[in-house]
Length: 105
Figure 1 (cartoon, rainbow, N blue to C red):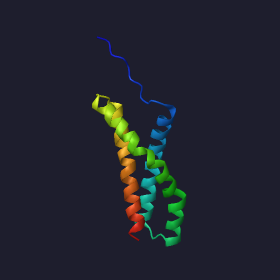
Figure 2 (tube, rainbow, N blue to C red):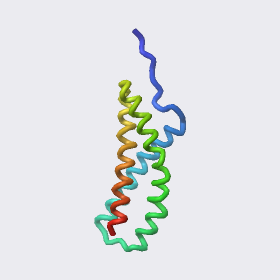
Figure 3 (cartoon, helix red, strand yellow):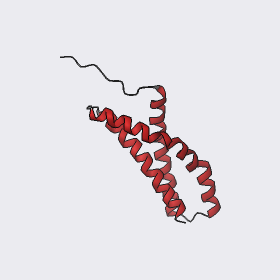
Figure 4 (tube, one colour):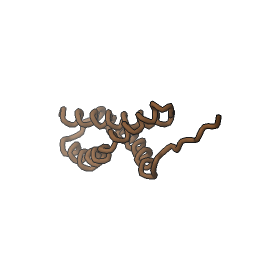
């Protein structure tokens, strides 16, 4: 029995979202390390929020929808969909961490 190969991404936009999410997670990790290890002034935090965290928040609005889509694909047995679920879940988690870090100051 021959299996039909599945496409990794359903559209070019989903692929773009996936790879930008990976890059964003990397940059958020660096930003989180900077915020927790150095003394950063309030003005700097406001600038970081508006120039980096706010666009990331708007970008992450699609993550729950793509997460559910990847979940349905993962239940069908797609390993790559499981990887996508992890990336989208981490995006939401880092967004939550950054928000709590910002509002705890």
